[in-house]
Image 1: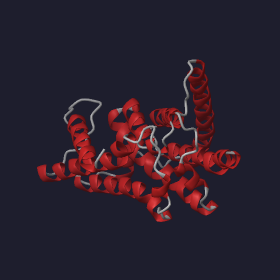
Image 2: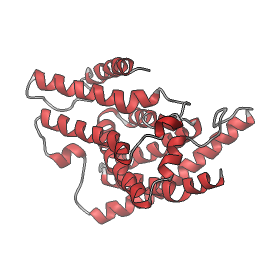
Image 3: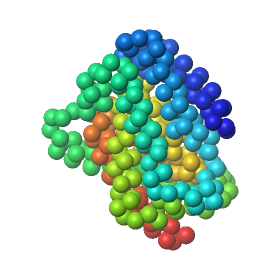
Image 4: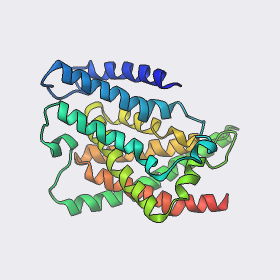
Length: 259
């Protein structure tokens, strides 16, 4: 899909999400002016197009290796920078309500939130592995392939695993913070668990393997459940980072080495 096509799809989604006046309701703020509201909607359209719709069209089609060969390390953070930029812009345009409340960050008992997040991260990893194993087994019993016709490890996975430990750690922290702020603090708080999970999964479709997306969907459900129960994004950030750390420092290096 072209960028224009992604923008059209995203614009339709934005119109549908912002038109609602009852929950699930994307817009909970009273914008100071129609111009600010329109600019915020345009920013949301662009953000969804670049971080959700375009990646979502790559379902089952991993990013070509030749494109990854020219990717430098800072460019891996462009998506996260876009999410942060959108959140800051929306907050400013909507009248700058208390920032911690806007982001659903609770400051009481931070150590408890961190401990809860660590436990949820390990639980999310276990649930994800179980979901992938069950799905792979069921598809295999039906005579299909859960990983598609080409079971080769996606180039994007090899690229990330090939990074240095500090670089992978930076990606883990960045993903845990900025993806959770957008998909949980912003989207889930306004549109609910299911839609935010579907959009979160679509944003990771560049992996190319359907079975990996089953895992992404499963861990997003766990993270979303944590957010719904706690009303706090901090445990979600920690859980997301723990999950990614297990994958990038333990599981995927072993898989790539064995391939």
